[in-house]
Image 1 (cartoon, rainbow, N blue to C red):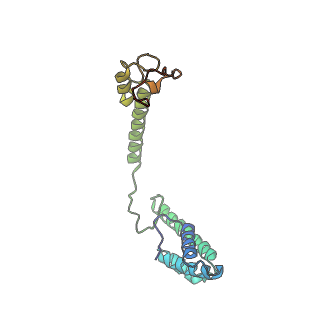
Image 2: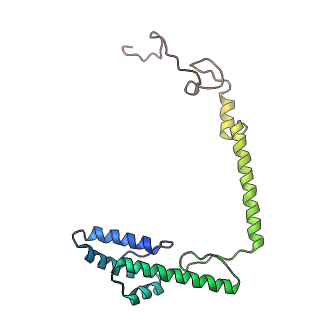
Image 3: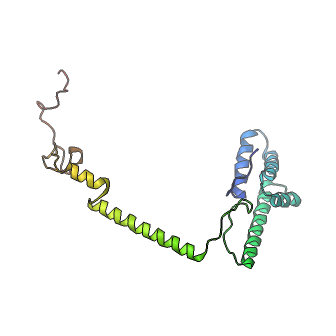
Length: 183
């Protein structure tokens, strides 16, 4: 049986159930498929309050059930937010309240984390610029390694034929790598 996944909206759940029911019962008329989907939707809700609200309102279609569930869920979130504000702890609640085990961070901890992120971002930007200039990273090693290489196309040092900025020259017909047909 399909159940609601953490972070999944009631609309997404309903869409998934509607799709599964249409695959399972392709020959039924749309009203019968909607009735089956409605029953599965009620059972797939993993929150007892949502299940109760949908059951008590006696919806006649899946669309009505989704609207009721979304409205009930929105009300629950608003109530929880008001409750947290009254306690002085404001944080966003995502998913089921029973499954939310995140701790509230103090302002000093948040400021410290932001400073660390800023420092790391600055280091990454500096590294990126040094790679672009050819000073460090794999690009720098590649440039030093290629500095003594001669291009087989133009004869200049510092790059290979496949990197050559000049137009490709064609070899005379009597020269080549010895793999011409007949040899």
